[in-house]
Image (tube, rainbow, N blue to C red):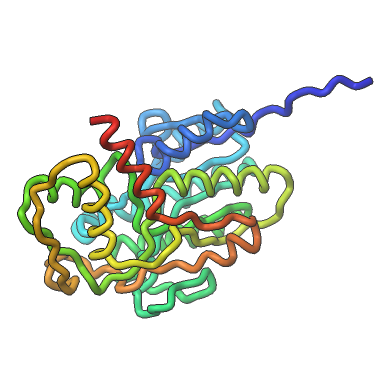
Length: 303
């Protein structure tokens, strides 16, 4: 009788390990015996350096690379072109070349900012991209290089990411609610908030199927269930936070996005259609309201 042995865990190397999604992805992976997570920061693997990439891949010999490293500051990208394109385009190309040469699949995080936001009904993976600014354009070109150099890839476009750490809309609004009597929020921007932990869940679920032989490479969309506006999302944040503390904010004011004086126009509609992910991988969207409640619990538990 042949003795059953536990399969070797799937080795997943994660770039940009201090980011929101990377943090949650690594934490979830470490709770699952199917995975061996290898989180690397810029000191351990500089994605802008071909030599650093090659050294890390040779050292760890991962089964998958998940690239979350990026320049995500939308307004700053307009003034820091070189940094934006270095991380969002050039680094993706170098990573794709190195992984392609070693036949290591790449899962790459991308963004709703590839679209101009004119489709109120939302965007599918087949819709034409049309970025509004430098950030979106640099991410678009990064996607193209990944497709060119490593056909065995997953591009996962996500939107409105929030978590208990980093720089995100939820934490900025929570800070304002503690310091400002009134908050303005755009009522003409539509999208689907998505928790970083939920994105981590989706990535691990995809990797399991791909590692088991699924030939489902390509571009996919994922976001939390239920379309909302920035105003309604802010309303939900404040309502949830008030369960834990008294906030200074007494008034939430709906305004057009142009009244917020941001440097770069944001897509009016960031709604991503997720049917392809469901039909291909069987992965369903989770309601962002449930995820928001969980993140707020984590924030206040830490405090």
